Amino acid sequence: MAVITISGEYGSEASEIAGRVAAALNYHYVDSVLIEKILDEYGLVEFKEMYETMPSLLSRFDEVNNRMKDMLDRVLRALGRHGNVVIRGRGGFAVLGGLADVLTVRTQAPLAVRAQRVMAREQLDDLAKATEVVQQYDRVRSTFVESSYNDVVWSSADAFNLVIDTGKIPLALAVDWIIEAHQAVVLREAGGEPTAHDLAVDEVLAQVVNAKLKCATAH
Image (cartoon, rainbow, N blue to C red):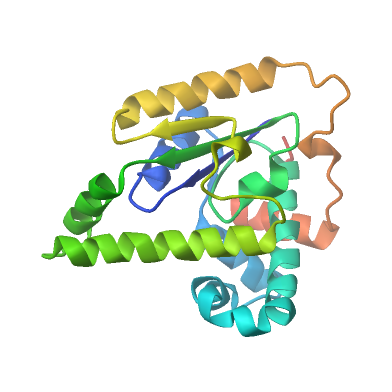
């Protein structure tokens, strides 16, 4: 079994790359929508709103974020133990990155490149507006991760095994690099290090994950 987490700046094509990697490996693709469905069924129905409005929630951060972080961590651990998953975003690298069978990836690109992509994708006619959108999404992501996980800097390469600049690296090559790195992780001897298989997971949550992945067998 193995797990890949892919985190990325807004407009760096992280979701497209994650989807392609999952398809190439025949792994489960886990995005924010699927994570939110699991959280909904497991009991945190307001997760999306809480995540997206985090900067305005800092005054009551402890009360709200501790509950959200705890439940999200549980879901990420359950997904990790299930195995053969590509997890897109939601702090997966911070929760699972220390495990021997987990590959953590970050995608990034210059702001100008990302703004142009977002302007084209979202049919915006103002580059300044597209730049503002990109910066806002980046702030939300960095605030959530850095407020939730001590000593983790969302923009730092130190938190990842592989960092790819999609402003220079074509998507197809990025996918190939991730798959090659994944194979190295799969073949690597754990040497007594903890793996995702060792994670303690609530069995009710594990059943919810199995149902949402449409796969009853942990890998």
